[in-house]
Length: 54
Image 1: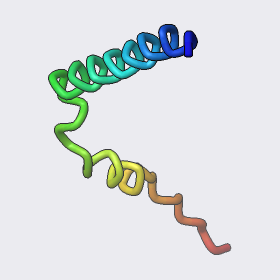
Image 2 (image 1 turned 180 degrees about the vertical axis):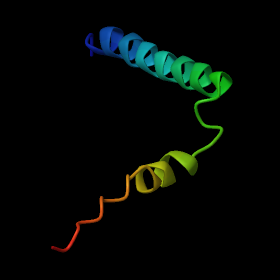
Image 3 (image 1 turned 45 degrees about the horizontal axis):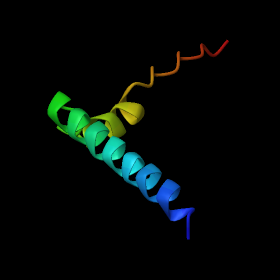
């Protein structure tokens, strides 16, 4: 039972830290554009050079 006096504040501290990090990321604009980075991976490819036929 005494372990709850240690685990409860530690768990609440983790939850508070997670909420603060999420709020900071949302305010900083980390979640504004979720689609473009996924498409950028597909569109950044350089077209292969054409091989000359001899």
